[in-house]
Image 1: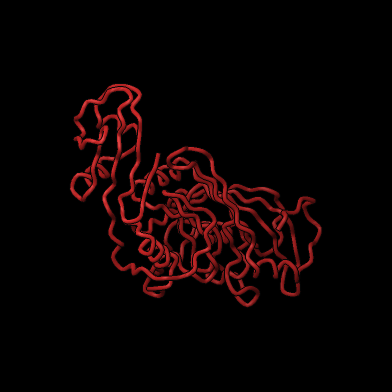
Image 2: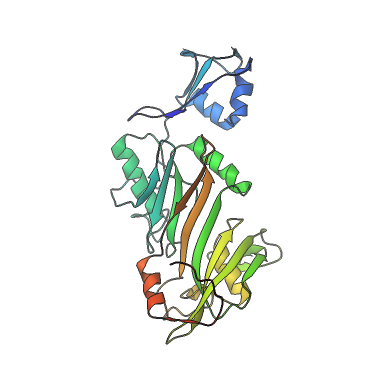
Length: 316
C-alpha cells in the first residue's frame, strides 16, 4: 500500500505474514541498504504498529510496517519551472508523460531550462511533493514519445531493476531510409563512443552489449526517397541505440543527419517512443502505455505513397 499527502513524506505500508527481523523483511521488499541509510540520517522513519523501530526489531505476524521515506532535494542544476506536461498516467509512485519533439529530457549546457525535468520539478513543487525528477527513461531532444518518471528514489531503484531484467519494455516507431527487405531482424552489436566526439556513438567491438529488434511494417516512397516504416523493441538502453543500430544496418533514420541521413527530407530523426510496458513497482501488475504518432510523422506518411512490400501495415 502506498500513500502520500501534500508536503508529507512518501510512505509504503506492509502487513507482516511471518515472524522475523525487520531488516530481513525490508530486504524482501527490495528496500536497499542505501535507502535504509537515507531513512536513518535524512529525515525518514520506520514504524511498526505506529511505533518507531530500528532494523533489529523482531516482527510478528500481522504487524503493520510503515516506511516513511526522507524528503528529497531538487537535483543540482535543476530549477523548478512551470510548463505544460502531457500526462498519460499518474499515481503516487509514477508519472508517465508524452514528450514532444524538440524538448530536452534533462538540462544540459545547450538546454539549461525548459526541459521536461524542469517542468516535472515545477509540478512537484506546486503540489507539495517532496521529491526531484527521477527520469527512469530518457529520449533525445528530437525524439518524441513516452517517458517514465519515478516520484521517489526507491521507486526509481525498483524500475531500474526491471530494466536490467528486461521486464521494462519500450517500443518505438520510426522511418528508416530505403527499402528493408527482411521482415524482422535482431541487431546485437556493441555500442561505444566515437573517438573525438562527445555526442556520436558507433558500433565498436569494445563497446557495450546492445540489442534491438526491428520489425518492418510497410514501405513508402515520396518525391525525395523511399523509406520503411519500422517498429523497434529495445532490450538494452544505450545512448542513441536505435539510431546507431539502424546506421549499422545501412538504413539510417529519416532526418537523422548525425548518422548519415538527409536533414532536408525531414527536420529531425523520425523516431517516436510509441509504447511502454512495465510492472507497477508496488502492485506488480503489468501496465501498458501507448502514444500515437505525432503530427509531423503522420504528415510525412500522408504525402507519401505505399509501395509493394509486406501485406501487413501498421495502423498509424
